[in-house]
Image (tube, rainbow, N blue to C red; front, top):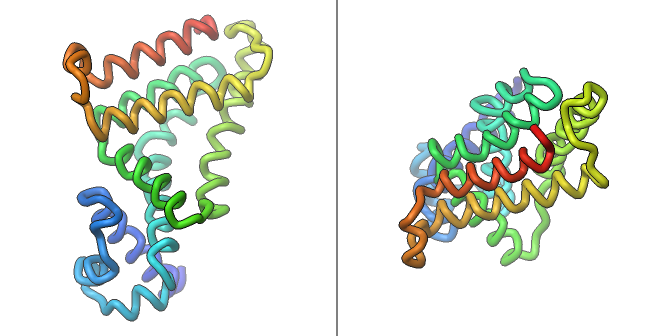
Length: 201
């Protein structure tokens, strides 16, 4: 790996560490440079603008999810993969709610900046979909799952619902009185249970 790639990764990981501590709009290029112990000019030389740096940080977060959580999901096959995949949402909310808070801010940041996510980020997200469909087809072949009219629609509807609820709970867990009746992960796990029941898993 070249020195340039190593430096790029180092700056992106440093930015991510700050974005997980503070809202994106409160973190400046200077803050990142100070944390990384490099000059601001170096950050600009590698990323050009904050938007590119925020996107690179989001890609680093996906790398962490891959290493710390998704790699274990991938060890499963068929229906077991699908169960582990959905349960990953509750596990991450339990252990790293700040990750969902960052994702929420990242989406809002891209909308505000009139930007789309990078190809790398989009491809990483798309990988989950492709793996899900393969697992669904394996489970269908083995008779361990209910046939869906449209597994692609089911995947996007359920994952978007889970992601949005995780983001909401990571940001403001007690907006209204009924929010205090259950732990956030209880709500997520109930939504996962409904999803898996629909699949007869």
